[in-house]
Length: 255
Length: 240
Image (cartoon, rainbow over all chains, first blue to last red; front, top):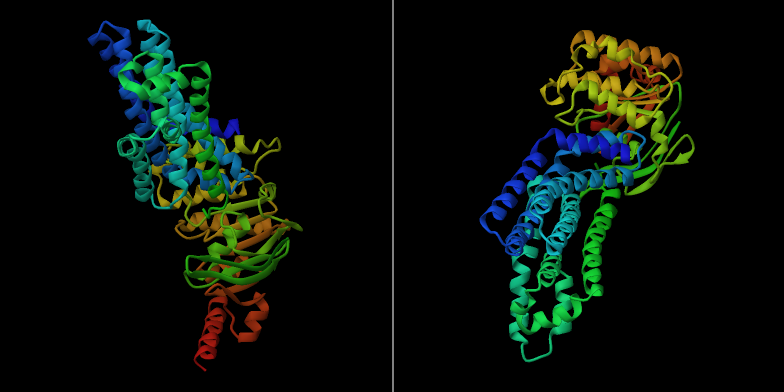
């Protein structure tokens, strides 16, 4: 598996997009740090970048790469190699490339500028978000043969989790504001990986007071270490489940 | 030995293979002939496990192939359109395939040298012409000395010299008792290379026998004319 992933990784690195991604994140992080002297505020600004840019780049790059590597997959399939191994190798290669770019682009400035624990949580949450969206991209890619349609589905995932879902949640909270909604909103948050990541950071940075009563409730739940562990595990679930669904489909796919 | 039993496959509402059964034995070489879209490539891809049949079963060397992959060690495949990672160089491609197979025994590099591919090792795949890609595909198919060779339109797009080199390689390997499945639209090539003929139309095998028998039955000397006679027969049967 590692050997095939290695070859796939070479292939990814040959097209220089991942390098540009790392540089782009580096430039953004360093400029944010130079604009503000308070590292805590910088982390909040970085949070917004991480929550929007990282999922978008991860899901679109992965989808395009998956469709472009159809030739590679075809070639591997005519060799004595298990389909499962091909699938996981591709995942490992793409996730490794994007994670490395992310860790360099966000991690290096954080370490150099000496930001606190909140920044480290940001780094970890962004890393998990990368995996989640690579995995969602696999689900989008195997669901169709048409590249344009695949990218469309991937974009739809991003719009849904990044923008539409929050609107939907606000609507529910306002419409049913007469009822106790804490448990329900907690469940709803678990259904969106971007919200999970956002809440981890906001609570860690201790600005949950800005989030009113719900924020206090979240603090009560997420602020404890069990809460943090719960959110991180949910992000892992968000990585594994779409990936396994995609694998199921890939095994039965005609190439 | 490849055994295909009642294999059916449809893409949407289009039935590509309709309960196809066939047996391919070692030491023989089979020409698979048929109009475009008759299901030849799909049949080949089901044997390779790239396309999964809706029903029926396929055995290679007595073992069912569903969900298996080890059996492909013994198969060399030359696709109709060889598609390779764009940014890879030819040399890197061969290196990668050798690395993936992890074979200790010497590989069969005869075609790499014969088709003068080693002079092009530094060229990237996306700069290659269709014919050069075909040469690469051919060299990969023969690389690991497989007992079964499946060639999908091997001579299409090759220059005359390369065609002759490939043909003599096929005949030489045939002498060693290997099993060949070859599809092509070039009847004279198949006449030279194959001992058996299988004619497919609309996902059904219409005729299957030794080429000599076919020629005797139709009274023709050339495979092309004999096949044309069969197609004509089918037509008149359908209109009758």
